[in-house]
Amino acid sequence: MPEGHTLHRLAIDLADAFAGRPVRVGSPQGRFAESAALLDGAVLEGAEAWGKNLFVELAGERFVHVHLGLIGTFDVHTGYDDLPPPVGQVRLRLAAEREDGWAFADLRGAIACELMTVEQRDALVARSGPDPLRDDADWRDAWERIRRSRKPVGALLMDQKVLAGVGNVYRAELLFRHRMHPLRPGSTLRVGQWQAMWDDLVELMHEGVRTGRIDTVRPEHTPEAMGREPRRDDHGGEVYVYRRTGQPCLVCGTKVRTDVLEGRNLFWCGHCQRTFRSRALQ
Image 1 (cartoon, rainbow, N blue to C red):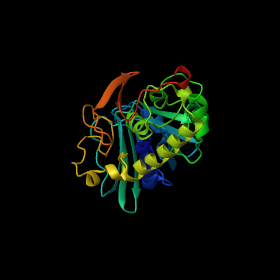
Image 2 (image 1 turned 135 degrees about the vertical axis):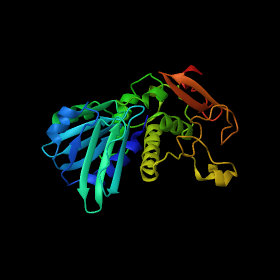
Image 3 (image 1 turned 90 degrees about the horizontal axis):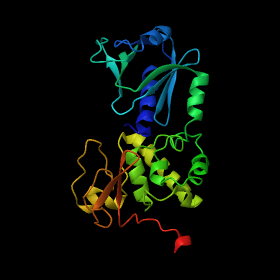
Image 4 (image 1 turned 120 degrees about the vertical axis):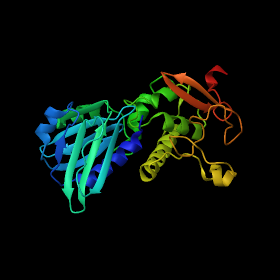
């Protein structure tokens, strides 16, 4: 599933392509046809992301809410001499004629594509945790939920009501970078630990927006620094533990482990991320 940096990058691309212009809005597949007819010809005001939710704003405080889910794509194209016909199951198409030719964006495979009022958008946002990529985010909002919960921190990081935009890659990598076992109860974290994790996550995810990939290894652990082969994986990016089951940890050499937590795979190093032992029980 795309993580938060992908949605923020997509919001930037959509705004660059269409903001301030009237757009053709269509639903070649038909599932969004009624709403598309209401929006067709309206000016696209902008686009923004909150976690894994994308909001495309059109004139009149109307929002198209998109959640890509596991297989969704929203591809933005610019500079076409002619507007090509849609290919495949396109649920939503945005199109505008610009000085450099046609721009269009095709949405396929999303789990959500719906027209919302500003009140509906605000209600959805209110149910979400803070997004590390937003300037208005406050790490303390997530901390209040984490410090009161006995759930594993590995589960809390993936709970979009606690923290918006974090998926399995950032979850695994953030925990490794902070030497934290994924099953450690959230209530055992100290506030300083969480603030350091938040600051790290903000930096990592902003870099993801900039580069379009997730790189989490520190300079001393890059392929060039270690004299190793670059990672080959369809997710791209250099990582410590994500999808590296059975491979040696880049820091200590211990084989990376995996397990399942709430239906999603965990990845961690048993040496670098030791099981948490409460001092009260020692």
